[in-house]
Length: 155
Image (cartoon, rainbow, N blue to C red; front, side, top):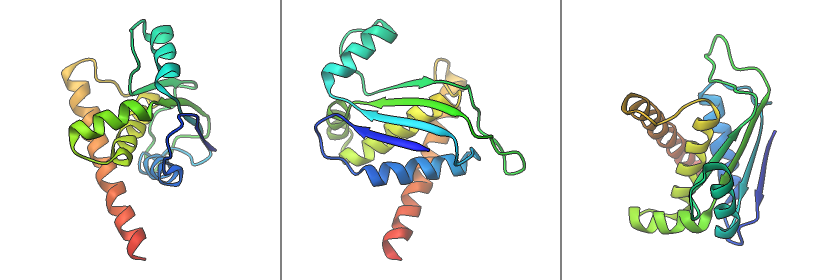
C-alpha cells in the first residue's frame, strides 16, 4: 500500500507520484504489497525534521526513514511484502531546485521521490562507487518511467 499525503500547501500531481512509485517498485522487483508513505511538507516542517534527524540546519529536499530494511529483489525472487518506510519531500525546496535545473516541479518531485525510495531500499551515495551505482539506477528508473508516461498518454 502506498499512502501519499500532501501537507505542503502546493498543488502536486499525486497520481503521477503514485504511478512513479508503482513503476519503481515493479522495476526493482519489490512486492506491490510493500507499505510506503510519502509525505510532502512545507519548509518549516522539513527544517524541523532535518535538524531532528540529521542535525543540520535549514530545510532539505528529501528525507527517507527506512523501516524493515527491505532490498530490491529479482524477477526470480521478488522482495516480499513489508514496511518500506517513509519518504518526506519538501516541494518548496524542490521548486527552487527545479528552476535551477531547468525542469518542471513534477520532474524534480519524481527525482526526489525515486531518490528517497532508493534510500529506503538500502542505496546510498556516501562514497563514489555507491554514488555512481545509486545515481545510475535513479537515472534508469526516471528514464523508463518517462517512457511509460509517454506511452500512457498516447494510449
